[in-house]
Image (tube, rainbow, N blue to C red; front, side, top):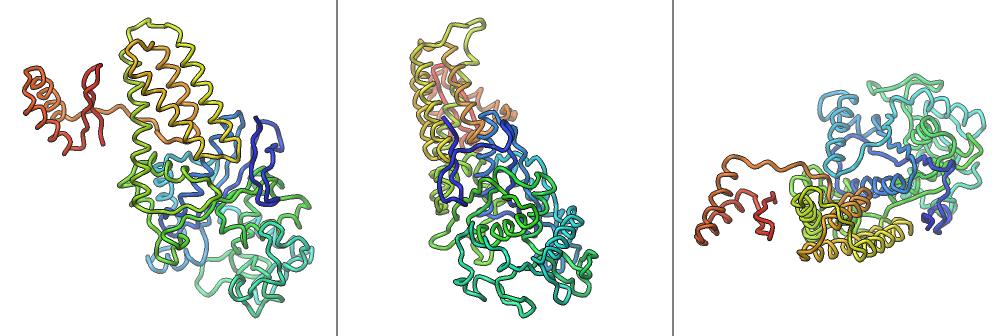
Amino acid sequence: MALQIYNTMSRSKEQFVPLKSGEVKMYVCGPTVYGYMHIGNARPVIVFDTVRNYLEAIGNEVRYITNFTDVDDKLIRKAEEMNTTVAEVAEIFIAAYGEDLAGLGVKPATMNPRVTQSMDLIIELIKELEDKGYAYENGGDVYYRTGKFADYGKLSRQNLEELQFGIRVEVDSRKEKPEDFVLWKAAKPGEIHWHSPWGNGRPGWHIECSAMVREYLGDTIDIHGGGQDLQFPHHECECAQTEVLTGKPLSNYWMHNGFLNIGDEKMSKSLGNGLLVKDIRQRFKAGTIRYFMLSTHYRNPLNFSEEALLSAEKSAERIALAESNVKHRLELAPEGAGEASSSETVARLANILETFHAKMQDDFNTPDAITAVFDWVSLANLTLANNEAKSADFAALLKAFAEMNAVLRLAPELEEEVASEDVERLIAERAEARKNKNWGRSDEIRDELNSLGILLEDTPQGMRWRRK
């Protein structure tokens, strides 16, 4: 098998060949840290975390960079609203972002560079663009001459002559042409700023990512990712800047996830439909949210609803329960029970894993990869129902599940559950009631525990409990 990735640049699937065998340089545009993550932001976060997981699973060392835009008009306005500094606003929401990542089962990036830490290089790159004739200054602002770059539009397939100026491109009388974009903004009185050859100011959005890619990953990277909305103008402008500066492609593979919609509208903070991840996490576990996001192919649009999350919750719980039951059976196996697993189990697990990898190698087809996980659930339940199943069968099941779950993370590692004294007392009382065939009291205790968020399971191997 060979990994195939749909490359936005070519509009086709291509075999993935990294610049250096066994190493992948990957950059995903990160948040502008002026507010809490909404569920639309969570989609690329989970999608590209899964891409990274799979690249690592097949033997690559991935250098995964996601930036923080920690200076911007939005941060300046937020600082004014909160009566604090731009730096303090950034710290507040970077910390909140980290909590949300953990709550989504997402691994930290290799590095999270901040715009404010790359200011010297940003100014240097703008000056180089100016020296090459691709940038010009007017009133302390610096703009990129879009029309001078012959390949502008090649990523997003935009035609400069057909752009609707004033709608798709911000109109500014200081620009030579409406499609030119800002590289450096002159600071207004009292605003946060940095010194530059053009006066006090701060960078435009697009040049920031070009600088951080170059500083932390080099001239050309393997994969550049982000939401579909970033194709134009952000990623298009990144290409235009970087390729003038280096004479090389910015990225060999461009990946973009589809929109997340509420009803018929694209998820957007400006529309007021941005449901916050921190609130959704209070109701749904990481596995549920990841299942919802990964049950649709990353390039397709995804419709968000409470009903869809509730459905995902049932599916994710079915997977987690099967894994938990297999672990329980293996723990009950007598010491030294080291028989070889049955040939049928080995063969079926090999087929499941082969299918899982084939689907993931086909442009990270997570919906079909999840189907392979459910094939595993079916096999696990059949094995659990077989009283003659060997401990080695359960060990093999867990090993196969761990291989798939390391990529999808639908069932994050569970901490050992510890019951409170009241819960332990009720469980013991119920066991005594069942021993005495007092079924009425047994049912009452089950209902009482259920109200406390404790689910009881009576299995052939004894009573088990777990939290909802």
